[in-house]
Image (cartoon, rainbow, N blue to C red; front, side, top):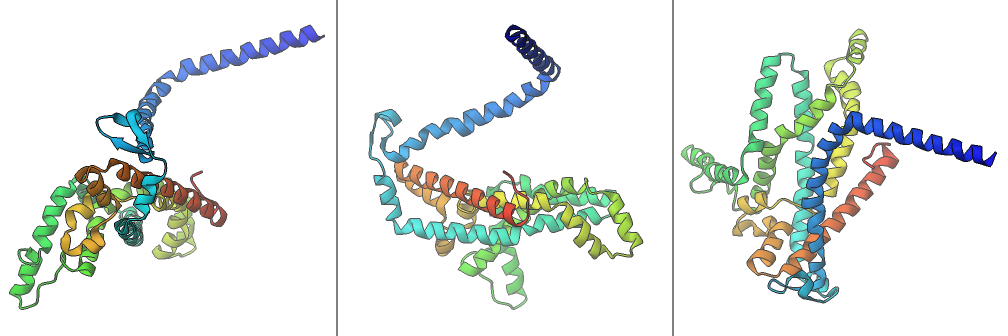
Amino acid sequence: MTKAKSTLTQMNGYGELNKRTTYFKRYWQLYALLSLPILYFLIFRYGPMYGVQIAFKDFNLFQGINGSEWIGLEAFREVFAMNDFYITLRNTFMLNFLDLIVSFPAPIILAIMLYEIRSARFKRISQTILYIPHFISWVIIGGIVYQLFGTQSGMINGLLQGMGFEAIPFLTEKNSWLVTYLFTGVWQSAGWGTILYLAALTGVNKELFEAADVDGASRLRKIWHITLPSIKPTIVTLLILNLGRMVSIGFDRPYIIGNTAVREYSDVLSTFVYRIGLESGQYTLATVVGLFQAVVGLIFILGSNYISKKTTGDGIL
């Protein structure tokens, strides 16, 4: 009896192995394609994590990571004692929070507006115009911003002064710079951000709109009760990812649009890392700040995902 059971178990094992082999032979092309992004992440995302130990060493460029002296948490204490670190951390949170309020709803509104357009040709033209800013380098955008909003030579202030009004310090006064910074970001990113929402909207059941028409619902009612609930999972997922980046900020926009006159607002963690890392050669301190951003970002993602799961039932994990 025991021998029969053993034979049956072996046969089941061979059958399962044959199923897996057949499945792999059938779909090996998909696994081959999947290997490319996996390889990319292993090399460019996980590979550099070896350098995280620089944060715990007195890194010497000539001695390398392994040859540098281990100093433990001394570099962390030094960074957390810096006044500039807390100023840049505050600015990073402030700019990211304001970006979340101003920039996050913009692609949602644009996507709904494009979805409601009935003319296919006008929709394609509008999408092309809205996508173009995403492909423009921030260096070029910075040049455009200075040409348009410069206090002395900017086109807008030239027109205002020509009409007898005073020049507006778009780039040299803190609050004016903040508005310019935020709306430049909306212009650059909103169009491209509509792609995910438009993709989600294509899956909306058309019969829901037909039923709403029968009930006499207005267009705004249909948007509120059908369109927005249909893309809620996409909105929640992107919101969680954006919250996870609250302590991380791109280097290009604040560095290029910022200047010494508004450094109180424009100096962020990425520019702080640039100064202490590349300009001053303090690689250990720069790595500490980078590690701090990564850990806090992870906490933000896990926390926002947990809250989202509890309140809305949607999340990414």
